[in-house]
Image (tube, rainbow, N blue to C red; front, side, top):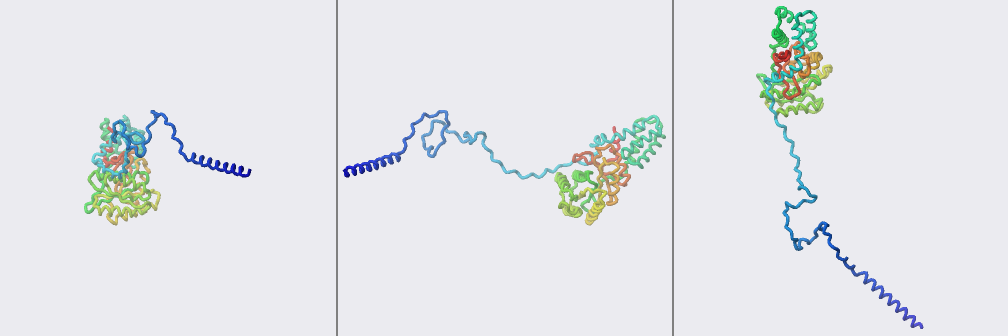
Length: 401
């Protein structure tokens, strides 16, 4: 009995071992491949794999490289070139200074001839009584001619009109033109001195208060000089405003003028000294020195302006000291002129924005106040709108056509 049980146990163990081997062998067999599916004719072709180039080529023409689109479609990508270096500004050729005021006469006439027409209308009255002469005086004073010049003009007009008797419009216009020319002055030397006989360069210093257009005037004057065939060095002695030095350098670059500048808030006298030194070494014709816009009420700043003048004169005497005045400020400009003339010897006046005011009499008033001539006038914001002052063209613009 025990023998039978033992045999059964052995049989069970053997069968279990065989079953385990069978299951293990089945697990190790690879799965059969999936059944083939029908090709999808609408699907895009599969990406090529390694070795695909060895396959039999398809029955279609091979495309050239120009016909093959780059990934993403569209035109071929362009390779960006490195940015080109900034080009130096082209040198401009300014308009010659001769005849500028004639060209700008119409612009001057539009703003100024109210004075001339007003005077001609009053003088054309049949009876010139005291009230009319008072109106003539008021018209002149309103135009900033000044008290003394106005009184002198009215006295002469009274005498000549009395002698003249009958007055045609042509006679009145000729009479008024003569008297205004006497006031403006035809015998003053209005040439900007830039060519000393015994040396080079000529040295010009430009002074004035803030807001008169001083730095712009310096740049425009450089254009006038270059147009007349002279070489120029600019001295940016307004060190209190970095923008002023930048602005002046831009003006210079346009006409090929070299600009000497110093550190911001540096010593203006040092910059002015260096500008004259550079000008002498380079052999240029003219050095223009732009000073800071001094407030005439600041004693310390005005003293510094005197220092700039003294330092420059260690090289050579100044040939010109031009005072820039804003014509629209009227009588306040006379106060500025008076103070500046006490600090430096003003040799000439530049009146800016003369096309923007009807008070052209400031030309007469400032000359009468300082005893120095108006040499240049500004008649617009254009780079060539600075013109040499011509008394006859100015008076003709006052009277109109």
